[in-house]
Amino acid sequence: MSGIAEAAVAEARSWLGTPYVHQASAKNSGCDCLGLLRGIWRALYGQEPEAVPAYTPDWSEASKNERLWRAARRHLAPVDDREELPGDVVLFRMRDAGVAKHLGLISVAGSEARFVHAYTRHGVIESALSDPWRRRVVGRFEFPEKES
Image (cartoon, rainbow, N blue to C red; front, top):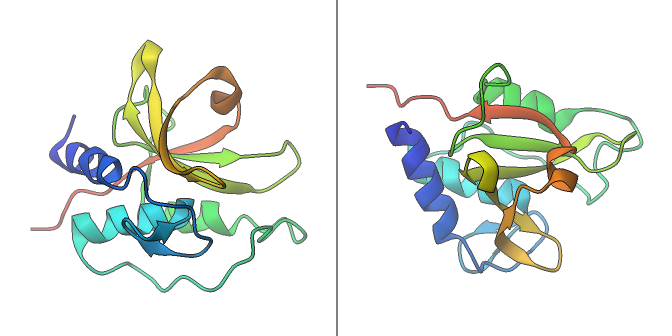
């Protein structure tokens, strides 16, 4: 596991127990899945790469606009061509006809794979990447290496 991936997993786990709060990104106070990834980004790199516009819980569904996927591609590196590793960011499509709108971070790879994510009514938790979750994965990314 690379240094940046190891740091990402450690940071994600430090958010465990943070309550779910839509559009928030504050460790121990509240966040949603995007807020969790934003918090990990800030811990790894400092300032976030772009401002996040306000969004509703059903964002991009009516327009079928893959805003979250495009944002992931702007700032993270796709890694769909290799096996999953701890530190990978996973993007989920929660409904077959819906847009990708949930994110998590792989914390354990392999047959006992797990991921950290902020989930409605549960807050930030570490879940098994079970078959129902795995079937919803539509993209996998890694954090870029830090610039020297």
